[in-house]
Length: 262
Length: 347
Image 1 (spheres, rainbow over the protein chains, first blue to last red):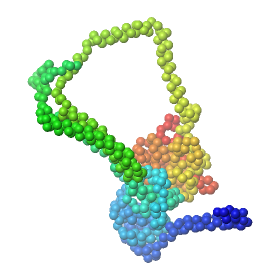
Image 2 (image 1 turned 90 degrees about the vertical axis):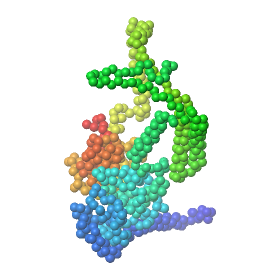
Image 3 (image 1 turned 30 degrees about the vertical axis):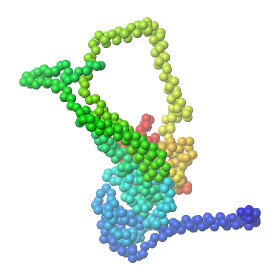
Image 4 (image 1 turned 30 degrees about the horizontal axis):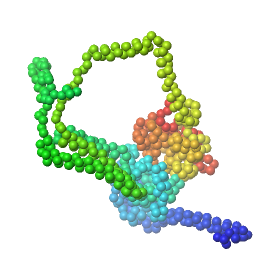
């Protein structure tokens, strides 16, 4: 430290300081930039796209059209991105079992490889959100407190503050998020499946998305602080329990109090 | 008091004939014969009941001990599972402590305390003479006070009683320390902090929003810029929160006076429900319905947030927006009507 303080008035000290500053900011910028590039760098081979096209024509074209241009039964898939395919097919929502208020999660119909090929085909139709890499959903880097704030402002009104899900209009509902994989949560935010609004990277940044996933994993792992959560549904399930269980106890005590002893 | 009698009451209680043909009569059966309990006849049963009652009181003592174990020993943790365990044990300890005493006393009374049935007769309703006596007493009191003869005293007493509560009105008024006039207080409900050129910023980060950031189908939760610098940010936020959405302008039915209120299909609506003020933020991006989670009022975004279902009284107020020279979204003015639930001068 002494050597450093002696040289601080050296004529070249200012130059050295400037160089150091430039190196640090430049280095940080490059690091930050490379993260974004890495995310967008997922490329698919031409054969993936070809095979994806065949799978698409066989399984999806009835509703989405031969060239994914959309029909009256299903929307156009141009520009929805690989993330949308990975979410819809990877959670079993697509192909749809039947037309209804909304497509529901069910055992998935395609393996990971076929899903990837379908994603390659749809991604080739137009630019859209890519499937997030492992780093984007690495929750060891996430801040669950910040994620909780973002979740309560943007998500909790539909998905419930405990991520248990809730009802929407006319038979639609926001599903619970406790057993959804990090990748699928990320993709749902980025693409806005069905009636969920889109939360693109300028609305909720990739870091904030990772924080939200960290928060969801944390409340999942820690469970309810106040005993049995009863599905985290609030007054409905709690009221039902107290009206049935609680009243049964009151009635049992009343009968015992007024009964004749043997 | 002490007017007990065992067995049947004085009147055997025959019911008069109730018309032709029906000759039913009702005999008061009196009380059933007294049946001794097991503990009354068998000393071993009595001993057993005694032990049961003691056991219940001991359960109560153990419950209290469990409470303190949970409070001082289990509570030395900050993990959720530790807190959950502590809560459970605190509850169980308190429940056992209370229930042991209660159940024990009832069991004691039912098995060991005397159980002879007694009948207490209803008191007769007092005769008319007593009512008149009371009336006369009140009349005497009024005569003695002389309130009828001295109207000056009566009137000044009425005036004093009527005036005495008035200071309370002034003291309650002083609870509001801003010294605002009545009109200013009404204006607090009428206006929000939105104003010409106030930037729309994200909740909670406070970063401004570029119009190009808002893609079709997305929803932004928005607060006015500078919210945290106001004197009372939570009250201001409760009035000013806005939901920003973008949809295809061709899907919207826009009335002529609102033509300029949106920017390329980006619209901003108050998030405060016009029913009782819950935040309406459940946006369905395909049906363009906005749902209030409290009472299921549903607003149609394509029809300027008209109510299409539920108890809300009128459409959500729209915030007129535009973009500034840098491309950021800004408000054109405040809302043109008061936000939130029914308001007495909405007009």
